[in-house]
Length: 113
Length: 113
Image (cartoon, rainbow over all chains, first blue to last red; front, side, top):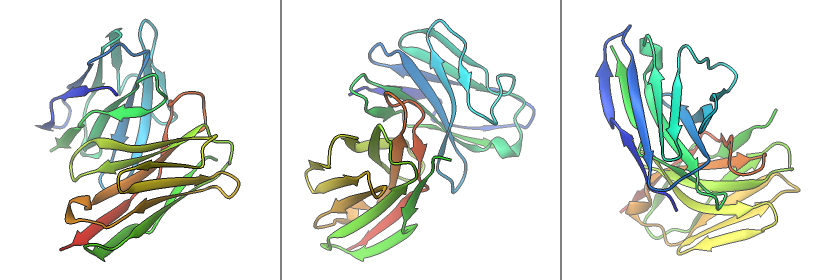
């Protein structure tokens, strides 16, 4: 299994500002994934982050709005830029530990006011 | 389009009851299927992973089955307890590894003492 630490666990932000979410894994992993869970909805994949290359974004998500960094094999950040109330969601980091089982962090609950 | 559906959306049962949660998916050519538990405002806890070549997996009071031909999986919870109250999510991967998990909307389970 993999242990994933996400920071911050929650935040309340003003519209128009940006928030960077950190994800730290206790082992080296090839791919890290960022998901969004809007209120009352299930999880939707935002992007896949491989170390040393540009993140791959899913349809409906763009790099200008959700820039991602992946500086090494144990760490990634997701920035939510120019926030609006519609960005209020839980953002979750996930990894594939290599056993083909997905593990998730505890999530970041973001409220934009 | 690859989609995952979970029925029912919510379920309330008395303590001690055995129960079944359902998950259906389009496109039977899955790679694997994973059941998760999510407590309110929290991240996801992996419960069971079923590879496409497997028919079922068991962990304690939990048993998950997979029928690819009919596009269905069930999560069986034996002797339910109030601590089992949570939202249960089914997620399917159609690609190699666990990238791009497609999630159902979940079943919110309440076990009443």
